[in-house]
Amino acid sequence: MKKLFLLSLTTLLLFGCGNEPQEETPERSDESKQKIAEMKLATDHHTYARPNDAVVTHLDWDASVDFETRVISGTAHYDIKREGDASSIIFDIRELTIDSVMTDDGGKVEFEIGPEEDFLGQPLHIPITENTTRVSISYKSAPNAAALLWVEGEKPFLFTQSQAILARTWIPCQDSPGIRFTYNAKVQVPQGLLALMSAENPTALNDEGVYEFKMEQPIPSYLMALAVGDIAYAEIGERTAVYATPDLIEAAHYEFQEMDDMLVAAEALYGDYAWGRYDLLILPAAFPFGGMENPRLTFATPTIIAGDRSLTALVAHELAHSWSGNLVTNATWDDFWLNEGFTVYFEQRIMETVYGRETSEMLATLSYQGLTMEVEEIMDRNPNDTHLKLHLKDRDPDEGMSAIAYDKGYFFLRLLEETVGRERWDVFLKEYFTSNSFKVMDTERFVDYLSTNLLSEEELQTVDLDSWIYGAGLPSNIPSVESDRIQKVDQANLAWINGEMSTADLPWNDWAYQERYRFLTNLPNELSADRLAELDVTYNITATGNNEVLFAWLEQSLKHDYEPAYDRAEEFLVNVGRRKFLTPLYRVMKETGKMEMALAIYEKARPNYHAVAYNTMDELLYEAETNE
Image (cartoon, rainbow, N blue to C red):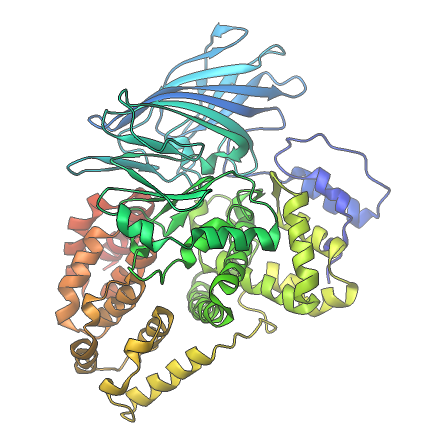
């Protein structure tokens, strides 16, 4: 065991983005002093900001949204805190047009924009003095700003996706997860459209198209969010509601009736909900993720509306982020697992409380299945990317958003629970969220916190933190998952493949979606298209309304040349922008000699995708075409 795990908790005061002054520490060994020195120097490599010199504390944002030009124009008024003798404050911008900059003590000032770097954008240097407390930046976004998707239709729709470092493409900011600020906003949008943000929100249209917002809890820039569209509102409970386009609001209101139950379950586990309301906005299908945990207003894909409330684990996941991520935030994107591993663990506990252990264990089984597949793939490419603590310097942090952070992180925390017992673990985790509320956390500080507040020396040896956090692949002590229902699915799968069970005798109609998904994703490579035809004729899987099952079915159909499903695959790929679905489907076409088909579909679909999605697909398809 490395001695870094035995550092005193006082190192908590010595790391991060420099927002807090350093305090004196007790006398330490030379090795401990060296480790602390390294921690002092740790920085976020994905921001130009220097918060040790000057940092933002509050934003007043005045903006207007123009759908014709696809431009957001506005002024960002920042309250700032200056340290020492800093002569400038630095913001992150990417493809923004900066019209002017003013300070409260100097009027209009000359600013400097540094050279552009891939995915990082440019630094915006603003001169300040010892008397400067506020800077105002007037600017315009680019029509193709990477965070923004302008969805065309009878009534247009705009939404943002700021994670990981895309907030800088629609607002000048210090774009680091370690820098928090409160904000107020006033946004002008076309009449007849509703504006919503990650803040206190309106519930109905107003005549002027001007909406005001307030976020009193400090948040990092990646949680800045804006949506504008023809949006309806439906209340679920005293603290919960759904927003959606009018054609989806009734279905969404039915689908997410259990949000209140989830919120109550989450609070019972790990403490009071700190954000006031928990509302859900169903976005157009082009949204590139399943959900985004924007405070007070989760953004979610419509692909989780199944009609039977079967896909609500995603809501549990985004709700859990209200503690893990939004309340206690990864200090840098190298520490992404601290957001997502905790959230998957918390999600599983919410699902267990609301739906029972068997349901949560089925979900955990699918997580393990996906994790082992992704680890195998990543190990062939870059074993370092299977570490929990990532190495993303000089890389787009989007590359770190894999199953490793989510599911390897989950199984690590599950191991901790099983090592110390659930009672001790829950006390520890609740206190972790409480004592670190509205603060940042990095991997080394968490290890220090863990070894100081939970694990004994013997337990540290048993868990083997080094292998989990800094080692490649999956450690040998990964917890096992036991699901009787999944085991029975696997038995039925084998019997059907071997001809010992007929297609008609499969319990398909009695299975939950997790069981159907497991069955489909474990079909063998050598299966013929005729066997898929048997399944489809018997159960009409191509027409399923459950998008998780549909995705698994389309992947198998493309893999096994089941042509009757091709039209549905094209329709799905053109209309759905969720990257989780897109990448495997385009990849299987690429790997099975269907590149012409893939490129033809992608030509139609790409204009409908968010930049987060099409950047990944461009790399997958266009580079493959070039190499060929």
